[in-house]
Length: 162
Image (cartoon, rainbow, N blue to C red; front, side, top):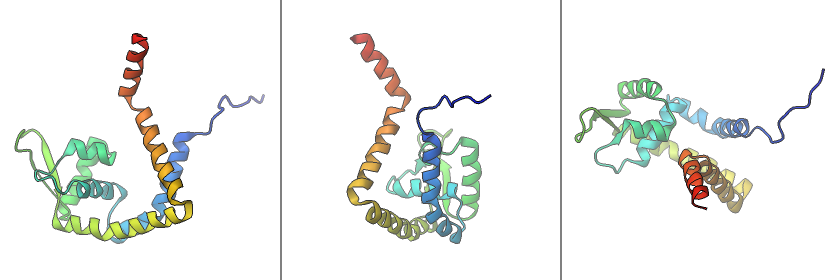
């Protein structure tokens, strides 16, 4: 017996994962040339973006921004520390917390890889057009904001007030 699929819309999570993998096909070879996994690169990218913070970045923030679960992050950081890419220390304000910073070698990797990655983004911009790429970024930002749990609570509060 054949039944029609109950889905009307395309599978957005699968499409987003497919798009991610398509983009990573260009990035992964460069990462592997430098001995980095996808997860290690995400950590280095986060640390590179926050390199100006004098105290480093708290591991919880690294986990959130690199989209890694705590246990996975611990293993990734252990390997990166062993390889001299990051340094961990206790948070001066709260010794229960750990902060991480990229070492000079880690920051050099971020610098070296950024040109390759930015060249790929420039290629995407050339192919899609500057306006369409900006629109893609804006739409993704909007979807992310729309799906945040706090927005559901705010929507409920607005309905209650009405």
